[in-house]
Image 1 (tube, one colour):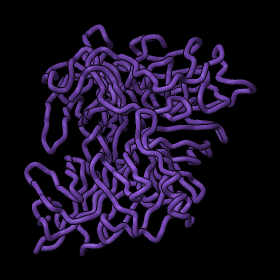
Image 2: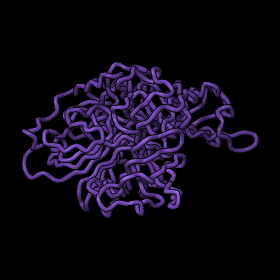
Image 3: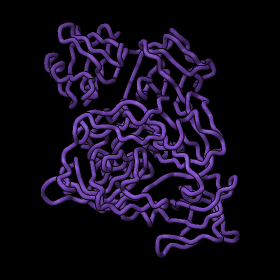
Image 4: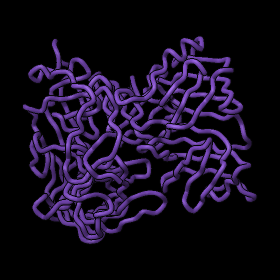
Length: 498
C-alpha cells in the first residue's frame, strides 16, 4: 500500500474538482490532494450569488476548506462539535462529518455547523490479512482498510500493532464492519475511549446494555446528552455514542450521547437538500427503499444514476445519495457510485481458489472476504471458488476498481455460458477501426455492431456513439460504456452508461 499522502480515489463532483483523484491514502502527512482544476471562488463565503438554500450532508471530507459530497464549503465561521475540541482548521482528510450549511450553486457554500463522527477510539485487538482483505478488530468492530484509507501518526497498515490505540473514521457496510476512511494513532491525551453503535439487551437492574452485539456497556456512572436524555432513553435499536474506558469487552461509560436525538439538526427537514455518502444495506429492488450508512434512502423511477446504472445498486456498494428529505427519508434525485463500476461476463480461464483470484476476459479479478460467491458443484450450489472450473465454466463478475485492481463484490456462476460482456470506463478509442479499450488492455471491436444506444436507452448511430465517448485522462474519468457480443472481438450491442 502506498502511504505517501492522498493522491486520489476520493471522488469529488466535477463541478468542484474537474477530475477524480486516483491513488492512495497516506501516512501521517494528511496532505490535501490538489484539485486538477481550481475550484470556483467561494466569493467571501457566500458560495455564489442569490439566496442560499439550506443543505445537510454527511460523509468523508477532503480538506480545502471542507469539501464534502462535491461541494466546497467555506469553514471560516463554522461551529465544530468534537470531543477532542478540534477546530475547523484542524479537520483533515478522511474525517467523517455531518454538516449543516447553505449553498446556492451545488458547487460552493457556507458550512454553519459540523459534527465530527468517528466510529471508535480504542486499542487494536487483532490484525488480519486473510481473504485478500486488510483488517483489524478494535472495540469489537471489524475495521477494513483499503487504498483510500488515510493514515495519521502511523505509516500505514503494515505499521499497525496489537495494543496500539487508534481513532477510526468511516461508514459501516451491510455486515456492520467499518470501512475505514481514516485511521489515526492516538494517545491518552487524545480523548477517552469511544464507540458508536446500536443498543440491545438493556438490563436496568444492573444498568448495562449491549452495544454492537458484543460489547457490554456499564452506564451506572454515566451522564447523558443532549438535554432531556436519560437512562430511560436506552431502548433497543437506539443509536448511541459512548465515552469512557474499554477493558476487554466491557465499556465503563462516563458519557452517553443519544445520537438519534442529537442528530436531529442533521436529519434534513422536509424539502431540504440532503446528501448521504456510504455503503448500501437493506437493498432489495429499485425503485425502493434502503439505507446508506444507516440513513433511509428511497429511489424512484426518475432517480438519475451517475457512474453506473440502477442495475449496479446492491448491498455493500458505495454511493452518494442526493435529493430532498421527506419525513426523515431522502428521496433520491441522484445516486452517484463512488467506486468505478466494472461488470465482466465470460469464461473463467484461470482460477486460484487459494489466492482467491479468477481470470475472466483476460482480467485478473480479486475476491475478498466480503465478496459474495455463488458457484455450482456436484452437490448443488456452492460458495467456493474451488467449484469454478477453468476453462470450461463461465462467471459473471460485479466489481469495482481499487486503484488498478479489480475487486469483486459478487462472483456468480450462471447455468450456462452466454455472451461476453464488459461494463467499464473507456481508456482509449479508435474511431477508424471502431475499437474501444477498457481497463488498460481489454479491447472490444464494434466494427460489426448493429445496436448503439445512448445513456437513455435510445437508438443512435455508430458515429454519434463514438463522438460521445471521452477516454480517461488526467482531467476526465472516462465514459462508462457497456458492450456485449458472442465475443468481444465482434461486439453486437453497445450502450453509453453515463
